[in-house]
Amino acid sequence: MVRIRNLHFGYSRRVPLFQNLNLALDRGHIYGLLGKNGAGKTTLLKNMVGLAFPLAGTCLIDDQPAAERRPMVLEDLFFLPEEVQLPALTAEQFVAHTAGFYPRFNAEQLYEYLRGLEVPLGAKLNKFSHGQQKKFMIAFALATNTGLLVLDEPTNGLDIPSKVQFRKILASALSEERCMIISTHQVRDLESLIDTVVVVHNREIVLNEEIDQLAERLAFVTGAAAEAPGAFYTGMSVRGPVAIRPNETGAYSRVDLEFLFNALTTESSAALHTYLNQSRHEPAQ
Image 1 (tube, rainbow, N blue to C red):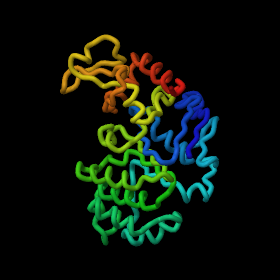
Image 2: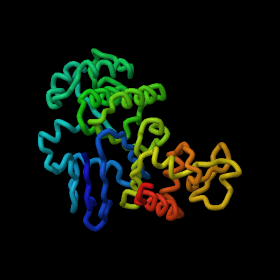
Image 3: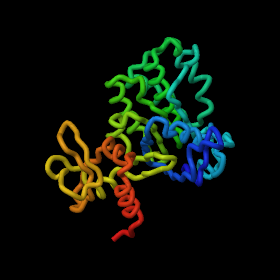
Image 4: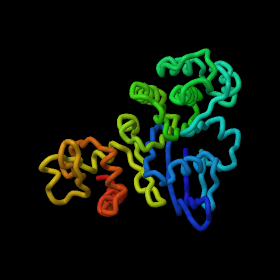
């Protein structure tokens, strides 16, 4: 679906943000894009959808250049930025003005999502709170039924009950024909939702792996086992010592995304990167 090859990008040619970046994203997955503040998550998303332009390399959506913004691409793409500002229209008026750009838009789904997110109808959208505007646009984005759905920090501005409902409706909207990409710095909000994690760090993609594969390769251990030698990364939590180790038993290990992200973005993570890269390229037994 999305293919980024040898991407070079910077707002100044003298200060590159990405160098030789490569990434492949496929339908049927919910990707979580993680990175430190300033790592370029939003910029990467904008390159994906054709709102920023590479200095070199390519960003393709179904083999079409994203930067050319062709109608056949745009009608199957929805990008929801972190900040939204809605016009002085009711929900019905907004749908009448906008839904026609998306051939698979489903109004019945929209109103079902709005009920689930407890978004009131009838009022002008610009009078909504920031959180209510965000929920309306999340519902609209899902109801477009585009093949590519890109959400930048969608849980910012949502209260805890809304975050729970957001995860439910997003999971229900995934299909084999859809690719969803969610950028966030609130890792805990997505742990139960995403099936593949992508980490951008130091101008490159350092991880693009399915959660189940990570659970097979890595063991997240606590207590005395965390203090044994041979761990890739160790730290402390409310449960005491925590460590990431090779999964030598093959038993399923719950992936702690926040802990893994911290491990991958520290200076001492070389051994973990090497292990994951080796495992990824080993032939199946």
